[in-house]
Image (cartoon, rainbow, N blue to C red; front, top):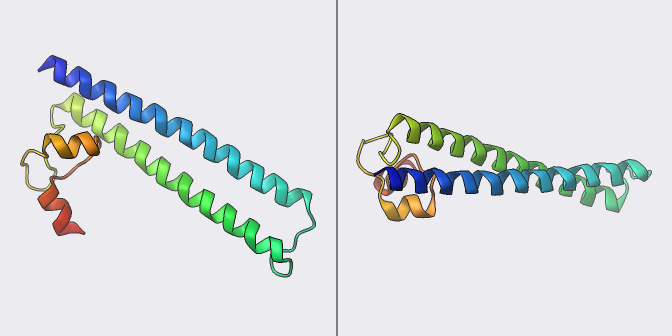
Length: 118
């Protein structure tokens, strides 16, 4: 059992590192878009390029929020692992299932409960 826990912790840590790298990249992209818009005299309302810059800023901002949420979910999964409740559905208490945890290591619910929520 310790080996399974160790492997799960390793997978969650690797996923967390990937998410942090993605967040750093997106933050750099966002900063670049903002800097580019500051270097121009673009008026978002009247300049055809302004709409593109605003759209890019919005898209990157949404991706940043998604990655931050994913990091929160990974951290919660690590807490569940330490508490001994990792792999149990938070809604019904059943096992989440190895295949689902393999695909979504931070999953909080089993497939049945996840499909009901949808």
